[in-house]
Figure 1 (spheres, rainbow, N blue to C red):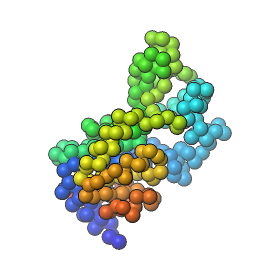
Figure 2 (cartoon, rainbow, N blue to C red):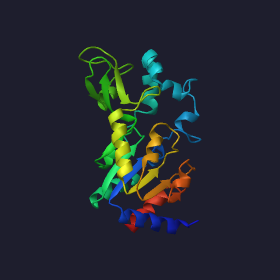
Figure 3 (spheres, rainbow, N blue to C red):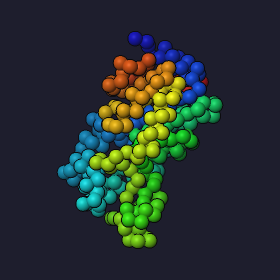
Figure 4 (cartoon, rainbow, N blue to C red):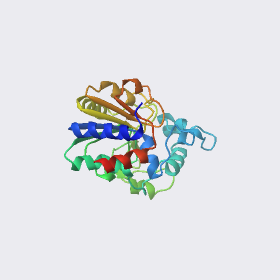
Length: 247
């Protein structure tokens, strides 16, 4: 097994020789910005919310039946926008400035890739920054949701407003999934960051990669480790601060 410095050099060489680079990112990368992940020991799913499992609250059936309870959870646990991108988001954006063709496929809904300046982003599970009326489809930004209490209602028709996120029990947006799969397939290099790759069908996208280098950077092992050309199980800040020094 290569030591850490050798791993960083190998990753640097892969990035330099690749023109088209895809990143597949999960909740683990946003922990550096202060957002809890989902499946770790201290993650969102590790603790019940008023006696209920977060997975239940995030199901579309629960939202339809108990929108007020959903929004109490949502505002406290997920509606976090007063945060900044971290070294990972900024590194990905910086590669664009170096002339790389970069695609981000993300399971995150926090909008930090956009805030960092990445241009081509496929938000597989939607975003907290877009909301819409379930009846007339009028759209609302995140500020409108933050300025309301309880259930937010549409100013046009009075319908309930929902966040444009993918609830449990819903399908991913077909066009977003299709484009994410295509861009991943056509990349020279795929770097998987901060995801356990257990959420289907999002994780299935990785299996479509046909490029030269597959890199997985995650603290825990994933089911794709045996297929990767390089696996780095280290602290994210250490990895990307070292990588920035090399570029």
